[in-house]
Length: 598
Image 1 (cartoon, rainbow, N blue to C red):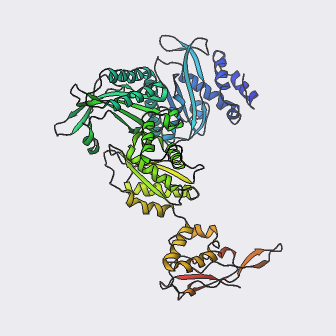
Image 2 (cartoon, one colour):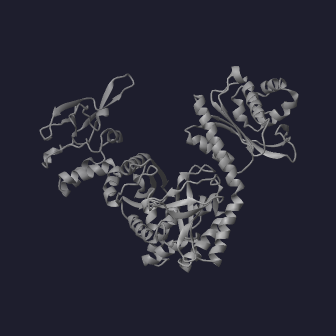
Image 3 (cartoon, one colour):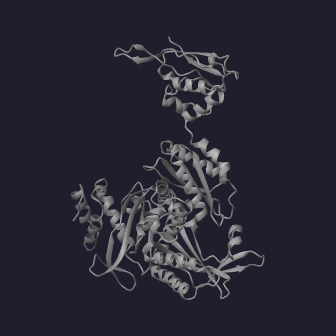
């Protein structure tokens, strides 16, 4: 069945198609949403389906075919103002998510996506014999329209990128069971032959965690074993062991990884489990940094000999379930609650638990109990105050820093977030700053930034004390700057009097146009703020004449720097006239504007 508003036109074009191909093309077109076909020429719809069919006409088992091109009438018999991506590959989970994430990472938007799963029959040479056959081999035929890619070089680069991503998808899917089995084998080994230098409590915690991972709470994408060695320069390195790679780590590698100074300091410690983020993005499923699970291996004497590493992603359960139900995390939360001294059912105890429930889950897995206790306790106290606070945590390998920022909910907006992001980027000389925001019913908004240094470059040492005042300046609003400025110039009584008179007199447009740091430098004399006079605002009568209307209050005289900028008044947009003068009350000889009563 052919659907869409161009039914007649489609039928006419399909009638010109070779009869043996016609039914298959009709099925492909029928898989496209009617709204998408309605806006396209019948020639282009049939041409796109026929091109997809030609790409899939010959495919070997386990082969992935990718074509990236911009069709033209002259060369292809149909056209599109966008670039086309066609893919033919064995059906598997994560294909569409991975492909669209890879395209987005190239800075391209997807405008059309069709993903029919086609049951096919092929001969030994891979020639397509039959489509939509019962009991055939399932293949994913993916058709996308993306932003126009201008050059052949860029189109080839995109095709190569997609080939790499799809190879990772198939490797991860094919090796999922062996990776899960490796995880469960570790559980067995820890139970039967635990390392002698690790406490029973830590072993039990690791066993619980690894068992939980294997119960569909972790998407296994890669696995490899490493040997911890000392190179000729006395540096600690991890050497990949041959034939141990699975999933996205299946490709053979002989390159040893030199540990960062931070990692070298703790590499030989008899600590069993490491939970952190990898320094590479996932190519499968979601475009996020991979979760890194490392389990150290030991010899009979209890010395660290290497690492068994899993890469992947925690599933949604890890982010949606109560923190008290999660392995590793639940024990940390109970330890924090115990250290607080608050009864679990008390008001303070419930507040602390709520803070931890809303805490970034990655931080709960990675952070220490001591730091979590200090941060969560401070955040619980912040709920009762209108204050800003930043908490920093450095990755144990020195590759990234986590910045957790709390601020009053009504102070959060995109502009504030971007200012903070830029501040962190410049302070840490970061190559990338990722963020997550939580704004709910709590009086505090929570901003979580992960700041990453360029590969091989250590993060600079930055303290919370150094960043705190700079974060406050980035967050503080225009009104708060006005209050602080008045209190710096006047005593408390006079500042309160001025605020009571003028605090609500500044329009929002004025606040946006006048920088927060642009202030009138005045003396402490009371004459610095004049008695309010009526303002003459203008409106247009129906006959086009200007009518003046007086308002009972005016904002104070304002000053702008005399560096060629135009003098402005908070209500200049509604005044019929202004007078410009040099105020003797401004010792910096700035140009001031004050409203006149007309």
